[in-house]
Image 1: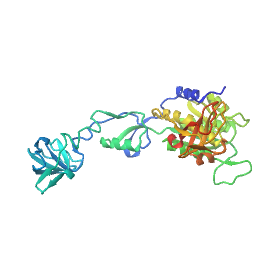
Image 2 (image 1 turned 90 degrees about the horizontal axis):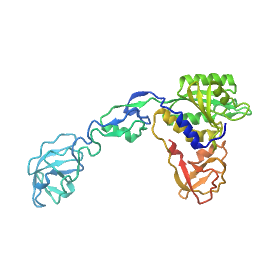
Image 3 (image 1 turned 180 degrees about the horizontal axis):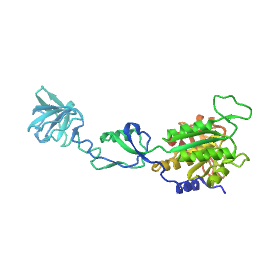
Length: 396
């Protein structure tokens, strides 16, 4: 199976994606990061009535006869208390957020007023509508404020609450099974023996998936044995919506995952022209989508971010999750290759500097840095060039 470009890989995954998550109704206080399953339509106007934008005095503008003409203060209106109709030729003491009384068309800020307690004098007034927030200024009744597929942020939850909505329909959390393969892997907390390494991918991917709002089904470390891998993959297909593995998809004699997947389903693509991350695989295991990430930790992270992420969000029912790069000045020189490269860089006021080693096994480079610089195939980067840079935070 020949190597394909990142664009071709994502297009092929897009052809095979479908919404796998069911719908559930959840209280808004528990909806942060969840994906809307239905549009949010306002049943009310926000604000529900004209209200004052500041502390001052409400009046009918035509009643103002100049700064030497006082108006009787006929009522006092505070936020949350309905006003009486304004008596003709008078003014009402009003506070920020309070409903403007029927018969008034302007509010004068208190700094432009003087009062003796029973009457008020205004040095100037604004045109009708001045200092008044009109009914429906924020949201009109019947307006669609959020679309299905939107990933809910804190400000969205505030918006939904402002409509009086206490529960919303969201997609159930996509269940992603993660399987770590390799007999060399050891869990943190245990002593390493010769030839062993600690399992970093398990914790990196678990936390990454959970930060995206998915439910992780952890199948731990699986030995390099085709029969054991087959049993674990079959179990993962039964209790998850998507299977994600690390390791075992390269060309070594002990890389059994690819062969097992082909025996239980099929491999649709294998090997992508990116660096790091070439030995990425996609297919199905007993009808369940399969994402095979490389075993090297930086390769696993990069492929999770640039290939797995958009596919998983689509399966969750989310809308477009495009990540738009920033522009930075390159503070380094880098020869190109025929593959698209993702370079670990650190952004600063002068531009982006590159970590010394770009090896796929140097996970420290991802903690040292805060972004990935994109190097197009066959395009050298010289100090001072403008390059596309994707901060890690944009993948969150």
